[in-house]
Length: 262
Image (tube, helix red, strand yellow):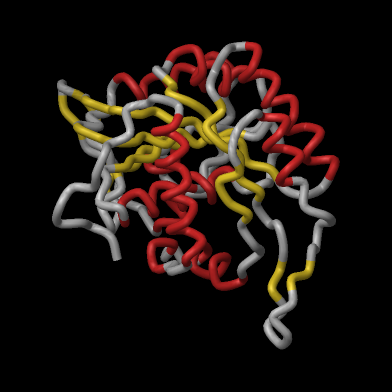
């Protein structure tokens, strides 16, 4: 494997959109003609394959496990791809969950990737700690939503990264607002934006403020996330690459020719 950048997406809080942001990041990177993969580290609550409409089982040999490719060429690995039914529960204790995550890193044949996005489960305990300690993480993207309750919990994840000297690449505010279809007015459904506050707390740039978008929700439910076309996705990916480059990581200087994006 030759993975140039391993980036974890975390928040500490469940339900703020880590999996969505992970998916949109990978999608935007492929549209920039960069090679991207997603390691679904949420072993007990995996949702990445559902959003991409992936149901095939991974194959492998003595050399390792082959990741599954999405329609636009994103490499993916998730525990849900091994379950008999996508809604089967994974009832494991912490050590087994940690082992599964490290196996997805060590035994999957990722090949050459510019970026591997690791979607972390909520919290700051076993599973996120396994990723931060066992994988060569280049940095972390923090995801949050506007509510103070969510922000309070997310600040715990920020402190965890700072205590472990893990660089925070940037922050993303999800569900930031809703655009009313009749007037085009922005409605802050979950309260006033905390984007500037969280960026300051993390000491990192604000990468994006993502709205509540019914069209995006529909495409995720139908497994057609890769059909989503929004300038926000493009801007998110460009801001992310710029932020990684600014921290001296191994971000590719220029896109390759012959892109896979739509």
